[in-house]
Length: 462
Ligand SMILES: [Ca+2]
Ligand SMILES: [Ca+2]
Ligand SMILES: [Ca+2]
Image 1 (cartoon, rainbow, N blue to C red):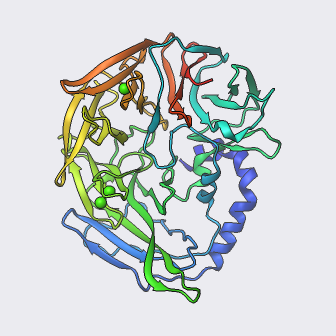
Image 2 (image 1 turned 120 degrees about the vertical axis):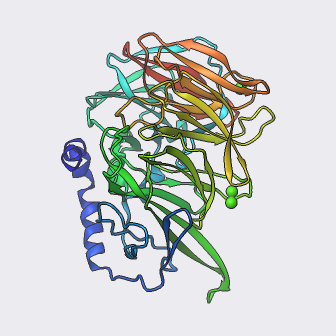
Image 3 (image 1 turned 45 degrees about the horizontal axis):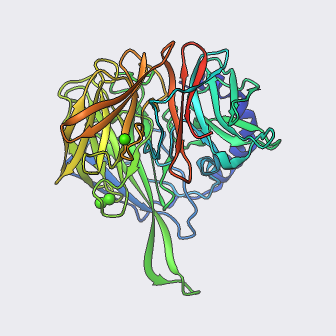
């Protein structure tokens, strides 16, 4: 992967060279401080290691040089606390992304009427990535019309689409394993390869952040489970969770002490199959949990919900055989009576079953399912081909996902009699990109998708 990455990240690497050099210098100068970490081997066969970070809230970097992670019973590596400007903190300034939220939960709290006719923008290339740009970022406004979307082709060709339907060509800077957009210094847009901003050895991995002191990412790339749904033989052997802890004692100024705690979970029987965890309040206790998809060759994939302290809250059934993936999409109030559910697509390349799951004790129980959809192209690092939003205008959250043959977009609503298609929109040329979406302040949303005919289809707020 390193050599592919050198190609894809070449341009951006130059941009970030000063930042990275600074980080390396700082990390070389830092001292080890693993004396207070604690590790526990749980019943689930995972090693959980807890490390307090320093109290100023400086965020450290893990030394994750090992390939396979420790096996059961073996002592995990020590975390190393370092004072650096971590690259992924820049992600908080992103103004455009392919997923809908930095939390990794693909949900937009807004309505888009997908039964209406879309606006069709001719791009002249087939987009595989579509980024939704923050309408308030005011980048490249022309007559006051800001950019709303950026579409990017496999070869790095890209174009920005304004909210008046106007189109601006961008200089090619890709290709990307996963692009993210920033406001450029010249008032335009700067596209960056996400992985260059992320402290993980897993290609295309990203850090998720709920904006309330909880962050998590996958790390510890290993090739011990050769399934390759995401284009290489590497999967993660570690889940890293960082949370801000506010403790009772006051400091000298009478403020509560704040510190960060890092929990590193080393998977010994499984790998985490995906590029990022998903943060959502699965048990309704007001604090987000961390959802990942764990797989192994014997039983295939299973959704696992971790508490922020590293304990396991719940698991779904495993698929039952190896080399069968499930693609975690999002969590929200999709149930017929607004029940909170976690949505995934089981085996998105073969029969693609959209599944709604609810927490029942320590189990994620499937409440409804519907098949023949596709949320992912085999081998792609684009995992944002499905989204939760109200796509039929009844005010309740649905799932928007392409048909298995990519010939249309469908809205799936979880009704009392089960999961039901309420809208189907044909997509001429087939769906070629992720589904990008965003919500406005008035509850109205917008959604865009690329097509194999070289167009961008747009529904909603203009
Ligand atoms: Ca919770
Ligand atoms: Ca909880
Ligand atoms: Ca709806």
